[in-house]
Structure formats: structure tokens, C-alpha cells
Length: 182
Image 1 (cartoon, rainbow, N blue to C red):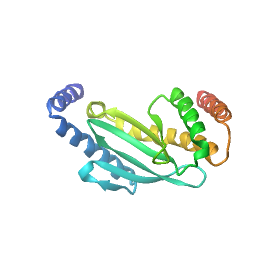
Image 2 (cartoon, rainbow, N blue to C red; image 1 turned 60 degrees about the vertical axis):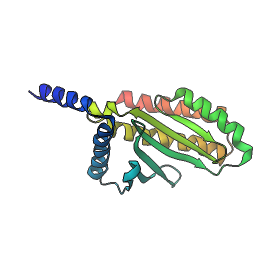
Image 3 (cartoon, rainbow, N blue to C red; image 1 turned 180 degrees about the vertical axis):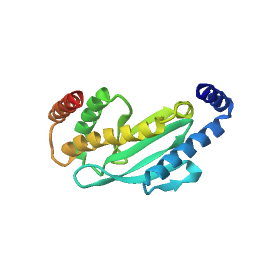
Image 4 (tube, one colour; image 1 turned 30 degrees about the horizontal axis):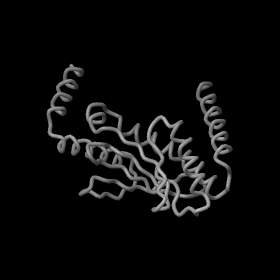
């Protein structure tokens, strides 16, 4: 009986206009933050939620989650205010990092002097499948930790992009070996 109910729910949701679909997913995003008890700032008119989360090096970053153009997005400013001297290396590192990312992308904003890490999925996916929003948020925060770490090594520690990517590869290899043992 549960499968039939779920099937009918999905048919109903697919028949809704795009704006109502977005509103349903937005309510699920808000429900997730309420359930987790995270202190979130809401921009209801733009369907954006902002939350400060700790990353590495004892620094917090403001994450943004929301609905835009029929997509659910996650975004964080990984590095802000970088010097001119590292611009070329930022592009090199961003290109290499984007090549290994499974989800999302890193963009370097030269005029804004920032590096953004974003991930988007179409609203239809969380509309039809339960748990997608939670998974997307947790995966984005986890991947942002790596992005934050590697770009800080470049900007603040002066490491070369090739060394940073080699370290990231070793770190991910060790992580996968630990997970396969468990």
C-alpha cells in the first residue's frame, strides 16, 4: 500500500506548476533545518537559507542553501580577499579540483576576489525522492571542507597546486581505505 501511496504522491507532485514544486521543496529544506536544530537565517522572499558552519583552521563559513531557477543549490565562499599574486595558481587549482569533483564546481571570481564552491540539482529530484535534500547538504558541507583546506593551503601557506592535489589524492585514498575496513 505504501508504494501505491508514494506513486500517487509523485504523480500529483509532477502535475503541479513549477512554482508550487519549488515551494514544496523549499518547505522540505526548512523542515530539515528545523529538525537538525541549526540556527539559520532565512531570506523567504528569495528562498535562501544561510547558516554559519565550522570548517577547518578554526574558521566558520557561511553556507547558502536555496531554490533558484527550478534548482536546489548549495553554495559557500571558500576563500575571500586573495592577493593578485595567486590568481593564476587559483585557476590552476580550481581546474584540477573541478576535474575530480563528483558533484558541484569551484569558480574563481577575480573581480569579487573569492572562490565559490557550488552544487545544484534540479528541484524535481528532491521533489520525488525523500532524503535527497539532507544528503545533498551533508555531501556539500563535507566536500567544502576539502575545498576550504586546499585553497587555504594555496592562498595562505603558499603551497603549489600540484603538491596540494597530490596531498588531496593521498588523503582521499586513506579515507577510502579506512571506509573499506569498516
